[in-house]
Image (cartoon, rainbow, N blue to C red; front, side, top):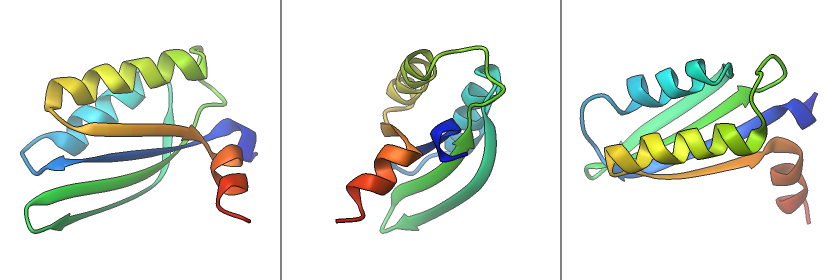
Length: 92
């Protein structure tokens, strides 16, 4: 299952519409949001999302490019990783 899951991290200066626009970009790409956590630390917005791409007609690369474009428009930084690789990197 984790080979069909992705981890998305978004950060930057807090502003209205970040969650809505990132969620819309994921929906357009056919990605199901399975979990979401967000916080604001001294005006800095940070969000972690777990998405499932198993029903998407887009490749991981296309999904990542779409999210990167969306976050650039928002002035936010984004990291998109496959969950199985993320897990391996953090289990040393």
